[in-house]
Amino acid sequence: MGHKVSYEQANAAFAKLSEEYEIWAPKRFPKKGRYSDTDMIRYDKVSSVEEIEYKEKSDMPAKEVLTPISESLFYFTEDEYIESKATSKKLLIFMRPCDIHAQHHQEKIYLSNGNFEDMYYKRMNEKVKIVMMECTEGWDTCFCVSMGTNKTEDYAAAVRFCDGELLMDVKDAELAPYFDGTAADFKPEYIEKNQISLTIPEIPNKEVLTKLKNHPMWNEYNSRCISCGACTVACATCTCFTTTDLIYNENANVGERKRTTASCQVKGFDDMAGGMSFRKTAADRMRYKVLHKFHDYKARFKDFHMCVGCGRCVDRCPEFISIVATVNKMSKAIDEIVAEQK
Ligand code: SF4
Ligand code: SF4
Image (cartoon, rainbow, N blue to C red):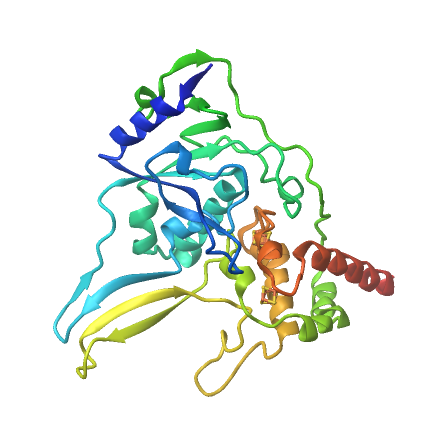
């Protein structure tokens, strides 16, 4: 059993909730897109249902609420450091199913990878309640069905946007009184078929993996990929960051430590002291990213591939490089290597 809630009732609920919650959702920023006449859809705080952009996919994923592109971690002097302040409110975040799955990958990396807990991520993550935005049609670059991320039961509330009203399934006892509306028969539905699909390749053994790493298929990215990193910044699951100390004045001991999103696709990402660099070419970096999403992560954590099929890397790439086409080429290369082994 669900509820039907008018926009007016929902906005009154938002107003009451905002005493305790920040409400985050995809929002349209006119003329802030890649070109002067295109819009940007990204996460921001909202105070009314009308502000939520639900008819189009957001350019940026929900991860930017918990891990913004740039954030201050702490402030320091010679004698002490002071942790930056996190919001004191709880967070209600509207997300699609793929972004909810991506959130689990983020949790794994920030909270349990190598038995290390990132306190800055944790302090935000423990405040989150998810409102799942029903997604039944997707867009031309989505392949969530192939990745198994098209469905989820992990939400405090689920919502279908209808003209002027919401249909809601509220599971969370704390949220329920805010959205009680009139009773309605509603259970969220999920997309069952995307416009594109991807067959996830299996790499049968280490020998095939080694040969795949040296396969000539990667070379085309030396001329195609400009190593801008746009794909990873927009990726729902990428977590890499770098840290920088901002020094306020001539005293190098007084300042602020910031962390900023970093990208394995940008030259210099893996430079080490002494001048060592692991991946010197765009082809090396592309191979690393694709294998990380479609082999290494699952090999390490033994559960899911890292990619959730949101397609944002495809949407954002200025060189029209598609991860689906790349993985399909990888499957073909694996088949060739396996055939040679027989
Ligand atoms: S690799 Fe591309 S499709 Fe996969 S989660 Fe990242 S942005 Fe989405
Ligand atoms: S794949 Fe595209 S978006 Fe990613 S670094 Fe290369 S050119 Fe930039």
